[in-house]
Amino acid sequence: MIRRGGSALYSAARARTATTTAPPASSSLGAFVASAFAAHATHAPDAVALAVPHRALAWTYGELHDRARAFAAALEDLGYCDDYARALGASVANGPEAMVTYLGCALAGVDARTAKRAKDFADFAPTRGTVVEFSDASDAGVLIGAHEPITVGEGATARDKVIMWDVVEAAYASRNVERAVDRDSTFYYNSAKGVRGSGLVDMAHASARALGIESGDSVCVPVPLAHSMGFAFGALAAFSRGARVVLPPGLASAGESAEAREAMCQVTLDVLASEKCTLVVADSHVLKAAGDNSLRRVGYEALRGGLTKVGSGDAIGAVDAVKFIGVDLLTVGAPKK
Image (cartoon, one colour):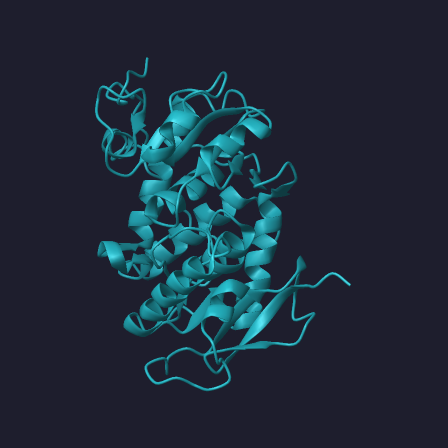
């Protein structure tokens, strides 16, 4: 039984397994994650996979892989792998918890459903449970048939009807998924229409090829991981080549107001400069807030390119590149005519 606060989470200990097989195109998302991370952790054990500067966090490929496998084990114990018909709902800001959630779903073969706010899950197909910010716990806690929400952030106590992320992390620190992934996850991005994990893998490979990503690159991803643009075209593309993913602070949606756009643009620019990022995956709101993008700016000499979403579809380069602080960003999609 899982008690309030998650203090009784349980699982049989699982031995670690690794493979150095390179991820093939169109593989399941879980197989892609398992093989790519194991290969990079073996060949470059000190290489950083994920950096979150505002939290002074830097995880190697081995560390991030272990955390994702541990979360996959938690999903198994929560029954997700016994009933694949019900997805895990996720409504969390960009950060290490969001990355671990999505990679863990992939490794466990569990479907993921994202939403901007926890209350939005009531409008979609039933979820088995959710991962949400603690501030959204009350909305997630009333979902019919769902287990107590797994909450991220400060404020939760053992008296709350939640499963605290930190408790899950501690309980599964030495446990991980051993079985081979034989089911491809589907990711539902703020809608009822899903994207197969293998499709996300194809997006990642296409992005990595178009940008010429190499292991020495640092890829800034201010776009939400709760969208294929951030997760597949950004994070998974970087992971496919052993590069470093850098996440700026996850703020309110940049599309909500001019103030939100300016704030998201500023934290993106700060991270690009401080982390000497070479590539960026940015949305149109950040580009607009940056002002005059025609001139190369001092302090961003490392930046050489990136991607930006301009319309529907997943085609890269169907529309001419656009400027961002003097650098060409390849376009994804095309505006509706």
